[in-house]
Image (cartoon, rainbow, N blue to C red):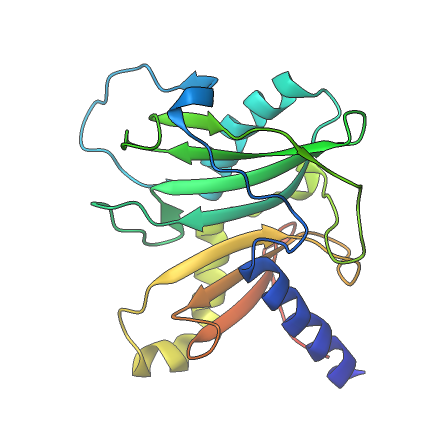
Length: 211
């Protein structure tokens, strides 16, 4: 049983680190931006948590399709900013609509770049064939544990490794598949080949241990 669960976790790690396999990856550009931040900054721009970016993107996704469901949320790097503590300067999320049989990839950037507007940017629609065992939509009410909480929980599990490997960059991916009853955070320091990864239940914030 422990071996089977470990294999499933490792399979999920491969899934989320390749942007959910079958989840579409359409680049978001200024040309198809539907919502951008307009309020002046009160101070230096700061990276934001996964939930903060998610809800901004969800509002645009819901305006696109009322039956929209999230498939994946991923932290990204943005030149000139440092991601830390579970916060990131750039986030990407893929949402799907069963009624439209389409999916779109949204991004949320805290700053304007040559490719992205500040705020929410929307990629073009891509055909979506529906849920699979490997890529399953999750409900927004299941997303209770933010990336900052996932970082804290995963840091405890990775304590010994981090002591020997300080200052490693960390990335976050939120997704779900048939093996899990709730969406999970995949928290990875370094790379999947030479790093440390932990899974955190995105509903209750607990680290998932293979059994």
